[in-house]
Image 1 (tube, one colour):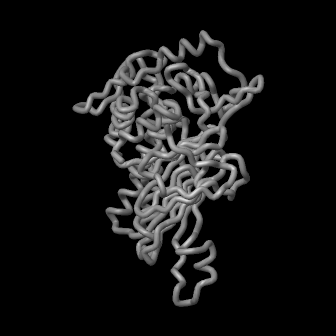
Image 2: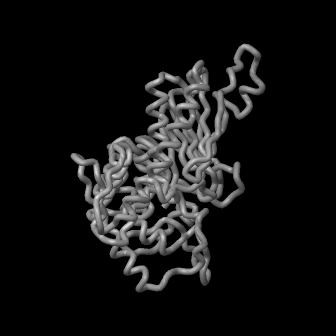
Length: 357
């Protein structure tokens, strides 16, 4: 086909299975001659996210991991909204007042976020910060805000009011009270920079796991086999998958609604907010998984697809180059874009793959 925060989803997290060829245990049970050197592995805690890297057959692995940690630290200082000294925090603090000079990396990320907002017609909007702060889902919020407060915060959400000056490398928010929130794409952006670095260094086979919600597979598995990725069943314990997807030099990422939420009067309010209504989506989607493209694109497009809803989301992804999508619904029906027809193997009898109408 033509081309919130991400979550470590109980509602559709990605499980990486160490499979090779035909079975889960081939490496452990294979002959001595078929054994592969174990990867060099390191785990980082950045952006409030557990990031795990596995480098295979990389003679300079330790140096590469040190460089990657410095890279992640730099990104954290640029876009971490929990840090009042970060560049994005300074931009938000100056909303309605003045433009703020930022690094080229921060400028490029915000510019890319605005471009995704334009492409998705605002269903992904990086200026959603005022609503995120109001609802506080996953940060102590327990009840829906009053309607008048939602309307007030919603009036501060408009990606068109993010003023970018490429010549002076500045960002200005037009309205006082506006706030950029890059939580929906920050991890994917970091993953893309790590991937770019490893490719530049010709590191070979590698896996980048961004908090369990995005897996980036560089190259093939050692020996040339595809990576086999299992998708977590949203309603089951960790380790029970709904489907298996094969990847080679690709990215897979999921956004879902079943980890960060609160329940009030029997209604589940999750963290993926619709900029048009100012409230969490309520359209029957449990999760959307994007396969292909960059991790940044996967973050933005999966969020937008959830906000758009099943039919509009499918149609949108069908027209988007380089990516495919899978929607898991609350009624346990699974829908995929045309490029995935015949390529998704469901492994749980609780779910049914259906044709999109």
